[in-house]
Image (tube, protein in one colour):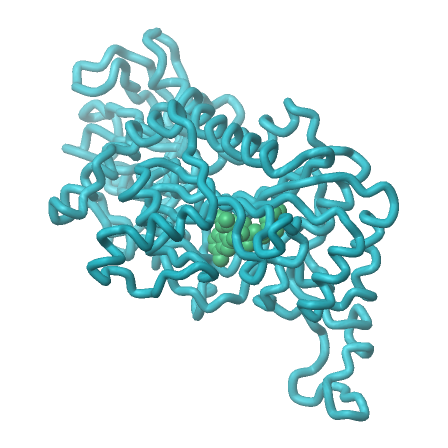
Length: 478
Ligand code: 4AD
Ligand code: MG
């Protein structure tokens, strides 16, 4: 019975009338006891169902309320109303599930994004979140297509690990030890030998290290999975649980890496523009409305579609970290003391610095290379100057850092030495170092933060609005 229905997206796109069809969906609005706007999540374009006077009992009409689910069979007829070519003249309306109009949280009016965040279990039923999550889906699909078409192997790297891939110590611990009375070693420290895995374990912050192992056999791999960071950052760009895409390529240097990352980002944008224009147009409108609420000097110069088109059509700017520092030091913002954080060679670029470079100075995505080794992870290839590493970050307008990557140090001695300097457990990571012991090759890779990419493509300002159920400090609802 259920598979006989037609999806609303397909139906509203047709111009053919006269057929009898069955649709199912949820009521968005019901006007004049006559016009139902029905939505099944396949598109924001609701189907107009017309219920002629006298077709349904008063008792049934009363149950057609916002949020109720219906099965409607009827005839496809030309629409007299504006905004749609066809509508459905109902022959039979069955209420599948009632929705108490007084209690249903999504009233047929505009709700704020903040309000909808509290009702995240229902927000998929709104136009904004319908569009965002269809675009998110399409991006995920395009990612697999991009890599599959280029012969990359999708490697499922582990979620639970015993290593800190980024060495930043921002990990969520995984344990089955009792909190109140954990087993202790002689020196009083917790004895993780007694723990489930016989050692201290955590949720992964990145699949890169395991990705490197794969690249040393398949040449080119990618991971695409959830990663976890216990950084206490309550910003519009940080999640404690986010998804990351990490390609890793053997026989590849920093230059090839940058080229692939740029091609990849452009491909994803183009793919969504080509395959889901409807939702991008809706999101473009939505952003334009949001921008109107802002004071004129804070509005962005570009609309969403203009921005996406611009990114596809122009090369990303490529500069060194050293040049970036010079630009910042010479900027009016620095001279007028507009930056909260100081600028000098050696700092980790703050989000205000990244945004200055991208939004004010270059006005396009920027790839920064050659960062000081002190602020980057142990595995990055050390440059000849002894000070910098072959790192590359891509900074995007409105987002800041969207990609982080590097060429990897393939020389065993140099890598071991760097690990010792950084007090990393060289012996425990012997498995990783085996890649450098047996057939080491120049290799490189990067990580694209999936939610930041979804933000970029949808124009959503807050990262909490592009993941189904956000995990952020002090918040783990649903
Ligand atoms: O720069 P990151 O930390 O790089 C890595 O994890 C490397 N292992 C990647 C690699 O070379 N294979 O993170 C990569 C990207 C960032 O540029 C950002 O887009 C995203 O992941 N990211 C976050 N996104 C949301 N919330 C957070 N807390 C994020 N932390 C990083
Ligand atoms: Mg980074």
